[in-house]
Length: 252
Image (cartoon, rainbow, N blue to C red; front, side, top):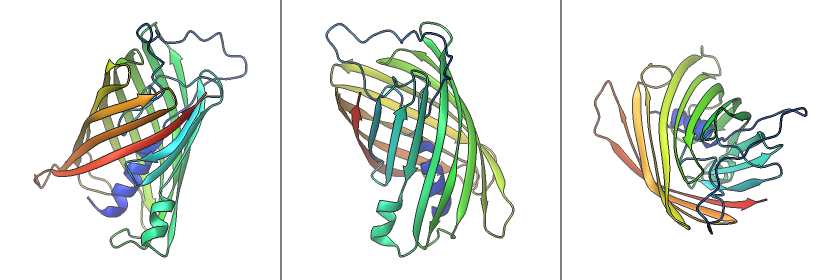
């Protein structure tokens, strides 16, 4: 996959989501964690993607995702959060031309005690003189996520069409279905993983990737350590493996 596409894809995945309105009905929170355990502060996120579980009003986080991306999310209400992601700090170290910013909103609503639906939209731009980046690119995306389970054990399905275009060229649409899950095995850690496939050739050839790793957490912090394996489908390349880490500070 081209470096310019990888940067846009990772930025889009780095974004979480939000939900609600001023007249929203009373919110019924998801089932609580095991007795004596603090609430999972990273329940809204997978290793790369997101879940349909919401933040509380005023809750949020900020930090580095997959080393390269600075991300932040704030709960506007019990069902709405807004979010931003940028790779600019990393770009400034290695390039002279550096700009990247994506933002969005996600709306989450409980369908049953353990089933949540979220939908939202996000968009932004990426520009860099890093070799192979191709200059300025823009992307907009809409997505829907269905999550079954609790903050400590859940399975999510996300479908996200992404429209990407660059200066002087026609844009293209890719569709990215993703399945992810998380299992908390003790108060301070658990396992997470995802698998995704983009079957339509767009700005890049059809590809697939999977992630697997462990999440360590406290009431105000979370650390994800994992690995991503990705490959192009048409050329049947050998999978490329990339380690990654995410460090987030949470507040309520």
